[in-house]
Length: 295
Image 1 (spheres, helix red, strand yellow):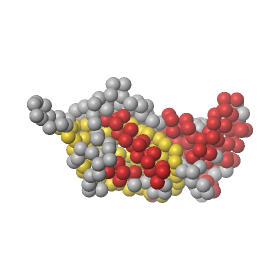
Image 2 (cartoon, rainbow, N blue to C red):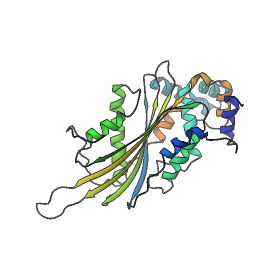
Image 3 (cartoon, rainbow, N blue to C red):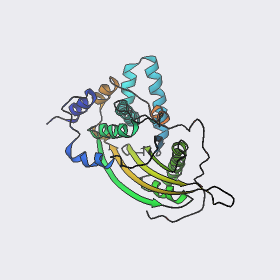
Image 4 (tube, rainbow, N blue to C red):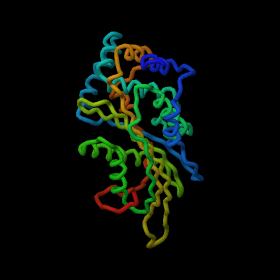
């Protein structure tokens, strides 16, 4: 049996015999796009760094970008060897480059299938272990989404309270960025919250939450008509991949450096869907009012 060095090189080279691993196929099926008859679609992503080592990974990424700019290959390899966060961001960047997943172009019809290809590529990486995969469905018929967002954030494991606030804000902004692009009665949006969690003395954890939201907007007109209301069906798919730093070494970093390098901040900043060019006045009432949901 080949060791991890050979298996990782196989993934880098996209060798035909690289297997997505049979035991991981059920995870890929988890991220299949639900079928629906809705008439609009938009896909987006937001990425954040979390954990007490996130700043250190960011600083190492600055040094990495400088080494790339200066053409210092040995320094690039050294940083990728020692900074697992920047190794992970490079792996994520390479996986995305092989797919049609482009959150900067959220209206692309290729995005939904492209995201599945992106996940499939990550599942082939022998340095990642699946530490969580689950799905949660909810029907929500309210005018305030605040408690819903709280419960979506709570699906993340190992996230400290201060980072949960950051993730919540990120999801709110992403939902608004995606939904501002559609203004029809039935819409479907797919948005992905990507979190890189770097805790001291622990492995980097890549958290992906795929949220598929079907939103029915009821628009009332005429004198005395009630304000718009929303009925939402949401399916949240959660995947956590843990980067096994004990398997990472200079040989693997050298192979990665020869294929693709993307620093921590470049990955985070380059994978966030921008607001629509013309914002539509859709108010989700993201406020303090607490409402019940059937999560």
